[in-house]
Length: 156
Image 1 (cartoon, rainbow, N blue to C red):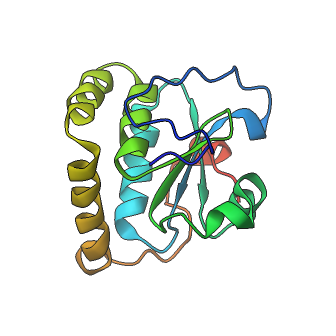
Image 2: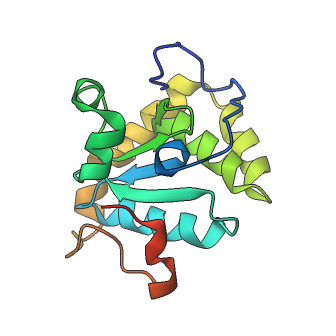
């Protein structure tokens, strides 16, 4: 699902502007209390060799500053992708856009996932989101444990 107020669909190709500051970068917001979200962040960190994505917990001040309270109430508490143009993607739309941004072999995977109807992919996403806390242990910190040289990719 896309939340830019423009109603664009999951399959639409976005052409973001070049980042010029923290507000103009791609941010992956994650549930700081979810073990699966922490694993997803570590996977994206490893795959994002070009360092295109920044990270911040949904519970943190960066999320509140960049997203705002009025849009927050409509968003899930799992993963939210904020594009440089300020639009927000959730569920399968966020996964497809994130895979495309990672580039390399992740792009063909994004194409495969994008072929799945959004309603089906979102239902699968929601099913995993419902059981994630039972399957993955709650982390002790709101940000995943990462190497010190990667800490600069995280915002509070």
